[in-house]
Image 1 (cartoon, rainbow, N blue to C red):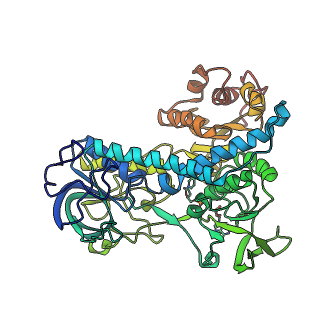
Image 2 (cartoon, rainbow, N blue to C red):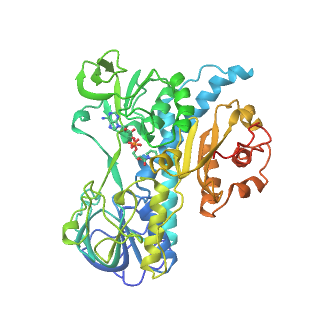
Image 3 (cartoon, rainbow, N blue to C red):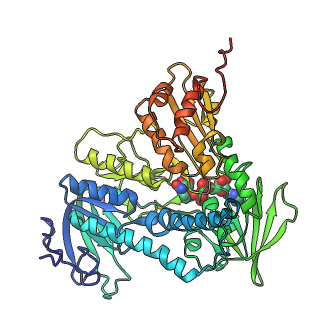
Length: 514
Ligand code: NAD
């Protein structure tokens, strides 16, 4: 039956290897005939939530159908989010380091950019990753159904593929025992920022690398604005960032953000806080932007391109959702319990669709919880620490309780900091401006939160997650031998600071205030 040397899962006896995607290593449906099929689990949406759910369910022996409109699983993260942006941020870092190398006695010629090759390389990364997911899907016996899903009820879905290259848009109806909704999110576009123009980009368009604008206005100083703003600044654009709140990355601890903010001052043309865009209009060969805010010298400014990155909204307008008991909250997020079950007992929901933080790794873990629950295992999604990483240069990362949160909750914590200027490894990298901090319970000495700003913070934060999840105390972290010379030592030394005994900073422990 299967041209790929695989057996089609039981109950799917009318499935065939699709002609349209043959050669891509996929088990696809033959769209030339109407089918009625059944499956244990239907997963709608093939991003990091959806494919993680589908793969684990298959590993647990379930018969799984994964539905998505794209040619391969991957979702926003792989196609137009995490992966292409990280490929470009890598290039940005190389460019920056090549320029900085002058100070180290190494001189390169000015880099020459070939935008077509850069784009092709980035697309190649995405292609290899999504293709790899396709293979993993096939190896596990997951049926990948390419098309758009419409719920017919709590246990059935119709999938159509209007753009089927074979010209056949006959729908496929599928019944399932359980369903997982993982349709993700899309960029928010408030009316004041929506202008039907090639010059106004969302993150997807910016990741296409259509051009390197001479001047770029980034609206929103959050994850996307700062990551993509950094990319374009490194590629040569004069970047202005406007952020409506009083600081970049609202919610993150200010001492971490200030490490990045100082560097952005050198990289960007301007960073305007407490500023909003109140008007956008196409004007000749640019966009005329009306800005409002105390820091604004000229309220009317002209930019080649505008990137809007002011948050994301859930894709919860799933066709047919009204035929189920699934509930949504005021912001449109699907409401779920600790196992990620919706108000409709057969349907679960995970990822950006169910709320903040909108992070791929949160989606994958929720997905695994939902599948475990469906399999009848005891499972609940109650993480002690979800790491957040902003992949700028330097990176900013945190997990668990933040100092900001502790203050807001009036919670008594002790915060210890290890400045990277005291790290030999940071000096060898010429990046002494970072900081590693621990948020510690003064009574139990347990580590409640970790924050890091500096090169590689996104890798280093994983140790903080393990420490928090394992209930480690400051003494545990101090007693673990960390390799020298590495940046990981900054975590150990931040714990030593707690005891007033850090080898590389002199900061005696103060007697507790009485
Ligand atoms: P965000 O919520 O991180 O940042 C949006 C920023 O825009 C905020 O600082 C907000 O105050 C500001 N803002 C909102 N309206 C504005 C306006 N009219 N004018 C000026 N500023 C305005 O959202 P994002 O950067 O669009 O990213 C969306 C989500 O995607 C994030 O919440 C994050 O979870 C996820 N993401 C994660 C990563 C990562 O993990 N590295 C990277 C990119 C995106």
